Amino acid sequence: MITRDRHYKTFGFEHRQEDDGRMMVYGRAVVFDQETVIYEIDGVQYKEKVDPRAFDEAKMDDVVLVVDHTGKPAAKTRNGTLKLFIRPDGLYIEADLSKNATGRELFEDIKNGFFDRMSFSFTVAEDDYDRDTRTRTIKKIKRLYDVSAVTFPAYEQTSLVARSWAEAQYEIEKKAAEAARAAEVAKEAEASSKNAEALALEKLRAQILSKF
Image 1: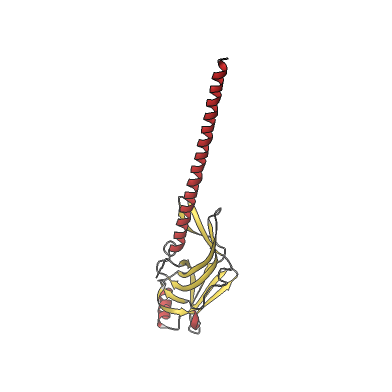
Image 2: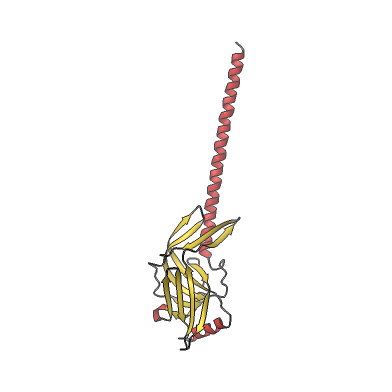
């Protein structure tokens, strides 16, 4: 189930049935330091990337593999059927779906092309924002909840929190730009007023002097 308090990212994967009967799924859930456009409005792009150390303190000891982020687990970290690996270039997952009926059914659906993308859900503990490049960097991930085969993996649908953040940032920057422009107009108006006053005084001085 998609909820607004979590972030979601989709990724590709591959599947393979091993000679020993294991039904394996492999994928790279996160590519570190790779920018992704999470929102675009009026030609302005807001991007996001994950720091290579983001998972260093993340809680990842009870993660499940499900369908559409809900339902009975097809694999889980606690019994070793789902494994997570942090490597220099990203976070990788490896799952054996042969251990229960849910997993075997999911593997058949994957093999027959019903699922071709996955998504994982997580919460953020710390982030940073570069206003010049409009890029948000996720510095620390608090918890990884699940890995999921997804029916509709569109990035727009599975990034509600990220989009809400980008929309809020856009509004902040828009209001700041409007305030800066208003201040500039006020400054120009004040300068114009002072010039007009100076001209009026000079004209009055010239009129007075012309009488002598």
